[in-house]
Length: 355
Image (cartoon, rainbow, N blue to C red):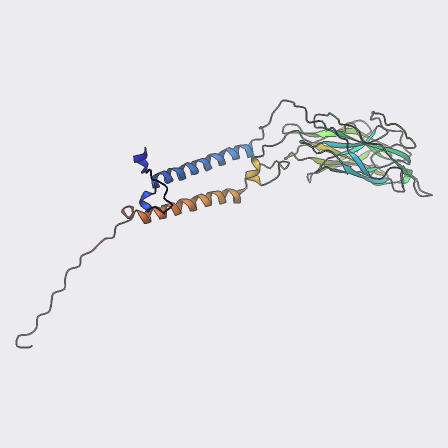
């Protein structure tokens, strides 16, 4: 093998050896092996990037948070004059991400994914006292510890009332305080208030499982028009929706967490909406990022052509450089110059008698 590859043993003198000591055949084999490995890796990554069925069907409990979410805004014992409110704060970071659901005296107001240790949820309050509590849920429907209850009073300006209000509304509780029960039944509705009430704290989905929101729309008058923003650029509209339990489904092309907004409106123009977290336990292999250049959450199934062409271009450049060096130091492999012998031109004779 050493003789075949022209491998030579020599002592390390610290001096640059002559090119005749270079094992060009061994280097050529290494380059060939590198090319084969590059092709094999590309084929494997393409299979990963295009295989929609590559997932584990077994159910494995997700890590349950040991620390609660914390409501930072609004402040405890605060009073507001606008029922539309944004609740934000911190939440435990896990993989897969947890969903943060906000309750008012056990009534689910909505939920949102925990992103980077923070959550932000838009909701609507009922007139009077609202006892807000944050609860985290894993993708396998296990919940962590509850947050401290934050008391918020909604006091509409004099001469106004929730009966004529419109805008983003997603439930609440009027005139109640104290401990927070664990139920999810909606409170007694206010006159004219339109409520969108989901029956689950979050929406699960996966490769072969569509996201499905289910819940009840109540209040207002007449039938409803429902608009659902699925959080991925897709919006669906449903007409003539009644007060029975409704089911709306959507299939995602990637597996990043989303916030789904369900908005309903009645014949008089009164509207109400609520937001819900949509999360997936499926995590695409991280090696797919080499091809797609996207985050794990993106779950893209496209090939990053520039990166792939760059890898092949670098390999071809190295291969061409190696070939040039080989031919330079091995002239026997180069085309030999061709020597053409031309016939000699005859020497003209001088005329006799002339010197």
